[in-house]
Image 1 (cartoon, rainbow, N blue to C red):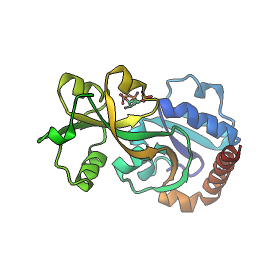
Image 2: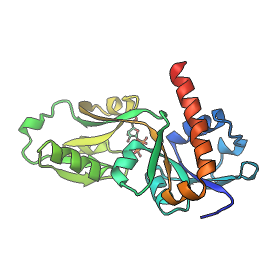
Image 3: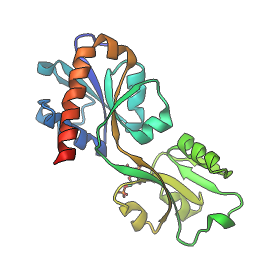
Length: 215
Ligand code: PRP
């Protein structure tokens, strides 16, 4: 862990832009290369910070291992990964939800051996166990909507944001599961050793979030 710099793990992809916008509103002067770069480490020495850009599912891993002090991770990832990190703030960005979906003519009641495809095997397995339904889980890494269409699975558990992907692939939502937003997460050791800087970051972010809620 770098004692000089505060290392922030950021999720690459669709959450990244919203997270950068939030940080800028919170007063972090992030240079233009944040908007268009394939570099995986971006330094902002004047703020004493560096940013590492990870796959969204891996952000809590970097923070748990302490190579990042703090990070931005979706609630979906937090539930799936169960990492030993503190979740200190709901950033209220990248709002979406988890849902179960299937082809329109599918009836769960008639399915005796349901197969469920998901990028979230643990979350999916916990969910169906709680519902008392026995299912087989097929772990995929993306393009989950393909699975029912080609007959790999009967249902999927996935993120729905605009609903466009389901619609364009002729799938329908059959159950809404949990609302998802991005969270600010902190390594427990860093929370002690870099308390002032992390508290300041949390305060600045919270101020923007509360301000936007009241607007
Ligand atoms: C996510 C998710 C859905 C889609 C939902 O996939 O897995 O496929 O976005 O968004 P929508 O409701 O706005 O259409 P992502 O694009 O992150 O890629 P992936 O399929 O590789 O997981």
